[in-house]
Amino acid sequence: MKRLVVVSNRVADPGCAQALGGLAVCILDALRKRGGLWFGWNGEIVPDEAEPETTSVTFDDLTFATTPLTEREYRDYYLGFANAALWPVHHYRLDLARFAQEAIDGYRRVNDRFAETLAPMLKPNDLVWAHDYHLIPLGAGLRARGVRNRIGFFLHIPFPPPDVLVAMPEHEWLMSALVDYDLIGFQTRTDQANFCRFMCDFMGGEMIGPDVLRIGAREVTASVFPVGIDVDSFAAMAESPSAAKRIERLHRAGEPRINVIGVDRLDYTKGLPDRLRSFKRLLELYPQNCKAVTLMQIAPPTREDVQAYADIRHELEALSGEINGQFGDFDWTPVRYLHRRVDRDTLAALYRGSQVGLVTPLRDGMNLVAKEYVVAQDANNPGVLVLSRFAGAAEDLQEALIVNPYDADEVANAMQKAIQMPFAERKERHAALLERVRERDAYHWMDGFLRALAGCRVPMAA
Ligand code: ADP
Ligand code: F6P
Image 1 (tube, rainbow, N blue to C red):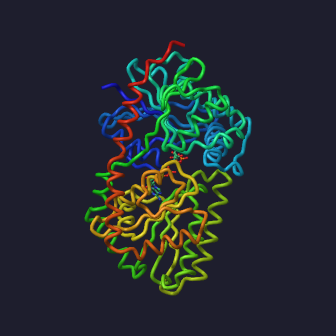
Image 2: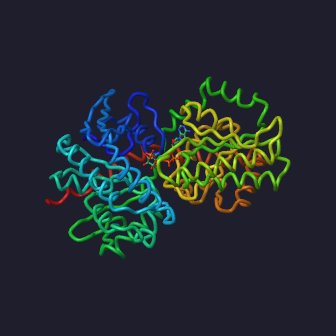
Image 3: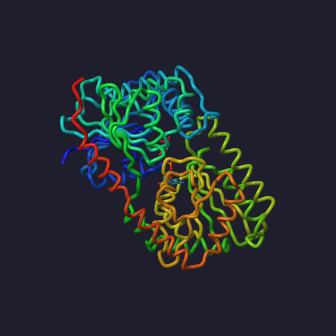
């Protein structure tokens, strides 16, 4: 079997093998089984004067080779371009996008440094797989250094409609860099279609097969590979005796009788203020839920050095305070908001102990929380998933209660439906969802992508 070399900005912490964010979770789940090399940022920031070193550590068959970012790289590449420009543009939020030349330059430089560091580590038969918006030009950087291996790229976040993308300065440079990959993977058919439309309408490409584009002298395959999770290990966590104890504690605490759970990085794309407003509408429209239903929202900090993230935190704190002040009582807190990271086994238990899973992003590449919630349920008494139509997961998980997260009344009505749903309907919906999540797990995702990559034509000589 060929060695797999994965490159991503975020790498799971090798020490505790824990991950936050969909990318690291699904790569870790998939790589644990196959082994290989995982190269990327170690999460550390060093002074600009320091020479960022790459260090390696191996666990079983999996080697983590990681490097810090300098302060300037962190500011320009990670915060400035990846998270203040590409992230909002790809999530259809031009209003939040900030474009600065030094950020674009920093992004180019880090991609170049990563290519320079990685190229000598590669063996001729390695399959190279770059991930996500931080590393769009990495393949081009490797090709410029003579790398002839098959190189694939997977975009974990949405690909926006062409009209949105063209508002971004340097979009032509960025998108033309994608052509150096042999295979480009997307989460959904919508993303794939947006990409192909962009390449044909704005870059002179033409479709020469259902998934194959010709652009100049290059042929690129663009296909859909929805990410998944390691179903068995997550289910085992949810079914463990310690999970049972935690669920008992959750219910013994006196409140709530019905727990609605939300778990998201505190990101403006996750629609958290809209979600809280929907919960408020639930209490207004169906007052019988007062003292009976609690929303537990777990939202760990993320990218706090970007202004839009600081803003969303304040908004959420104000809203949860407002709802608790207006509706709460001595023995009932309507919104329990936790601004921190939680162990995966605790998360699994909390999902299982919650009758409603509320996953209502305004736009999301996939959303693994939706899949985790389904897997964690007790099949003999499952909870109900309320899912935004704008999450990539909605393309597959149609037996959830699909909602428009911008419409507070619609979401409130769906929550009420979930709370009252008869046992037989809950069971039927859950069985269908679980089958789908199981079918498309982390290994299916990785196998599908790598098989397609191995089947791509050998790259043409430079
Ligand atoms: P994104 O990639 O945008 O963060 P996903 O829903 O796809 O969104 O993935 C989020 C991942 O991070 C999930 O696996 C989820 O369990 C994990 N996660 C989210 N919040 C927490 C938290 N508070 N503690 C630990 N893990 C979390
Ligand atoms: O899955 C989307 C994603 O942006 C990943 O690329 C990223 O690792 C994750 O969310 C968490 O964000 P960050 O790495 O910026 O903490």
